[in-house]
Length: 152
Image (cartoon, rainbow, N blue to C red):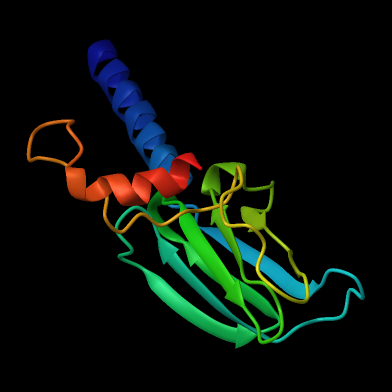
């Protein structure tokens, strides 16, 4: 009788732990933010594009002055914001930086005029011609032109 009670107690404890772990993993983090003019602080209607990283398996587009979307499976997302007459902006959103309300808040300031220099620390950079040999860390000669731009 005693061992049966003890086994039942342990089984109950394990079930509770599994349920708690599933609840913790199933929390959906939301990315939210507003797009506004850097100088006037007025809202700007912009084209907001997001995609999950690294494969872009989840994508979406908004045309608004604000955005909100779920960040599934603890994936990071890139977000690109474009509006006529303003420099475009790119950000990397990480669900690990979510606040207590499970939200990653990233307000976006757009500056009027030409785009900012594209090679700055913290900016996302697209390399279309970075080619490696299969199974090796050797970079192909065809990639050198693009890598020279990165170095400069």
